[in-house]
Length: 89
Image 1 (tube, rainbow, N blue to C red):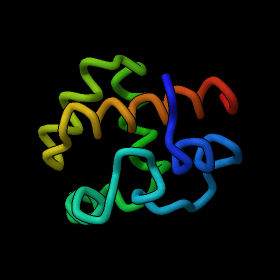
Image 2 (cartoon, one colour):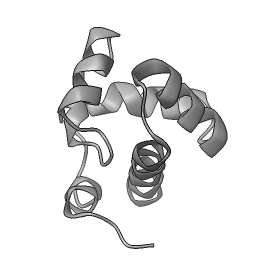
Image 3 (cartoon, one colour):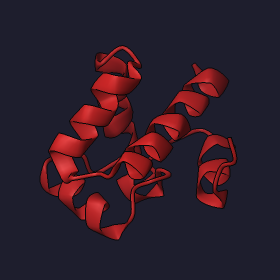
Image 4 (cartoon, rainbow, N blue to C red):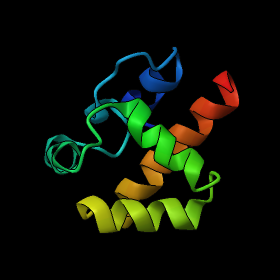
């Protein structure tokens, strides 16, 4: 699977206080929708990812329901968080 530069940048370093829009698959529109629902930082989305036990189907369905992410957007975001967890957890 090829990854975007955004994905590579995200997984290259600790998350810290990165905004939700720094996640692969999350652009300005989805980022704003997530922020409106309280998911303003990447680590808050990571928390939901972990609560869902890193389950791809559950996380992608949650992202679709929460902010209207497309299949590609949710796949990109899942892959980004999964790779980050493999590197840092």
